[in-house]
Length: 155
Length: 155
DNA sequence: ACTTCTATTGTAAGCATTTGCAACAGCAGA
DNA sequence: TCTGCTGTTGCAAATGCTTACAATAGAAGT
Image (spheres, rainbow over the protein chains, first blue to last red):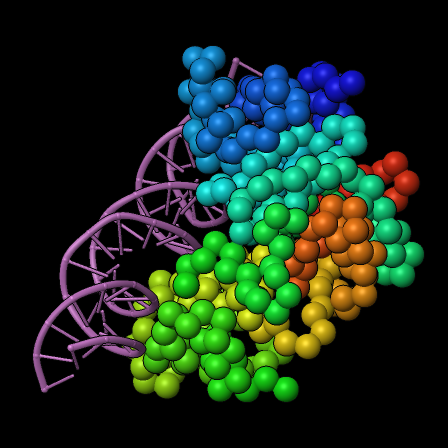
């Protein structure tokens, strides 16, 4: 459904003065090679470097921000040490993350249908909700009555 | 509606082995002194230090995380350099942030009513949606037809 | 008051990410 | 081809936040 050349052509069309450099092409190739995956910036850098190319991590950060500005990738804080990036292709999905046990539950985009509608109609705001993480407490860790959620207790 | 001693008493009740130290008290006092404000960690540190106390910034980070774990403060990335923290008191509010012009639009918590309900009923997940930032495009910056959003163009 | 146990702090070092700047590369016009 | 303009990169340094560890200081029991 998406291929490298289409993506690049689209990016160039949307901003004719942007340059499709080797680095940008390589980063996109790396992302396309695992189209459903969530990758940290370091992952991406490693994937590109695995092909024998040298490429600075700060450049990858810049490229990922650039792709994000065009809605090509999403950036999400899943609560691990570093943000993950993934291609925005087809139906987006999101994650519920339990603060108590760390479980990550995948949910599909329909949960945001009503919020999207409200924002568009009542606020005329066009939200970018491509890959959200919602923190909270999962069923197993549900706090009992007025007893206490200890969460990842750091007491 | 909230005062320092009630908060402290509640925190102690919820975790009897937690200690109410001078530092924790001072951080809470600082937050309570501007109950509606959004403060960076650095702000909070400065507020406390303005009272002549010395207190390390890393301690403040730790205290804010601790308060967040108990749902007393929320932490939000508003897209400025650093996260902002604010007391979770009464009705929460949220923000829409325009990626093109930087405008910040305040919205109240009702926009999340339906999402909350879905998560609770369909996923038995109890979300912590206390102070969200939703990025997107505001009315004034609405992209025209198939023309292009340049956003904060970094071309 | 003294001891013991554990929570919390300060310090310094670490990680993730961003930024300033000089060098470089692609494109346009002379 | 040369010249200038602008976008992009690599490097190094800066920023925001977290963590390891040793030292400190509450709380509870003696």
